[in-house]
Image 1 (tube, one colour):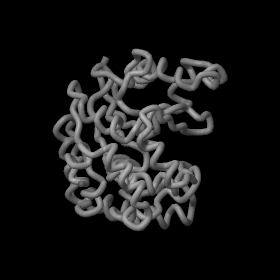
Image 2: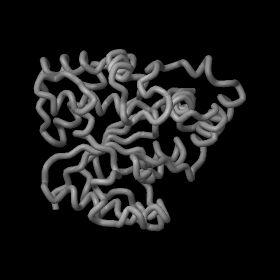
Image 3: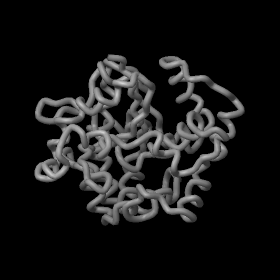
Length: 275
């Protein structure tokens, strides 16, 4: 079987969808102008269409974590057409009851987006209508599970730390890690880094004119205005493209909650330059 899956992976509210917007605009849009329908070209995994032939969704509702039984079969099914495909996920690259989320026979590579967990906590609180304390507790919970789509399919996101380390430590397929903060500060440089990575391992063509037009179309402020005009189906509570800044947590997060995050993720935050 030809492994053709590229993952856009991240802990929730880390900038994954911004990269998804850019890639769908660059690769799939004829005029390189973004619209929300383009995001369907990089669907969320798992979703109904990927597993409905494998399991009775009514049965899956009884034990949502049984979704892990269908991770690999669904990917094998997707890979049957041997074409390059991108999938978005917030699932950590971990095993549940001995079943790994993905493997080297199905995955070509990954792009992992990481963001300062203090900013993630604030963004997640607004997006999911949680208190700041609830959001921070979810961030450090190694058993944290999210649910996507109308069928509420489980994403085992785990804690911010485990999610990040689980992808970073996967050495049996190639990947790059993009910091959200670098994406804000050096948008053109970071998107070019992504394309150079894709060119290296899958011969993605780099066209400078298309590249610059796609970046312009996917400016965060433009995405935010489009959401105001048309809504965004993946916004489950508060606004999805809300601020797009780096350091709003300095005003939004109490000292106690900030300390709680920093104590739990000290080593990783130092490694990433957040402390």
